[in-house]
Length: 86
Image (cartoon, rainbow, N blue to C red; front, side, top):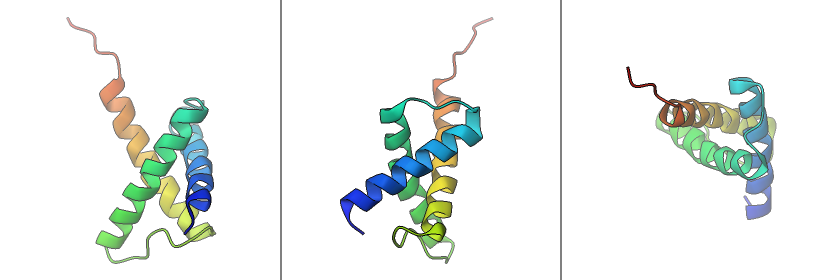
């Protein structure tokens, strides 16, 4: 898969995942970054469990990428959430 296709897939996955997780985007750069990281994480996890990972610019790859991006966003929000000290 070409780098441009991977970035486009990451952008779409990051945008969709950010809308699913917190209803508002994180910003263009962070959406793309988390989407690309999510594509890598989703592809790794799907391959680890015996399924096909990210294979190109298609619907299956988008599903894998969005799944990974949602996981990355949930972890991101858990780590970056402001903590109150009582």
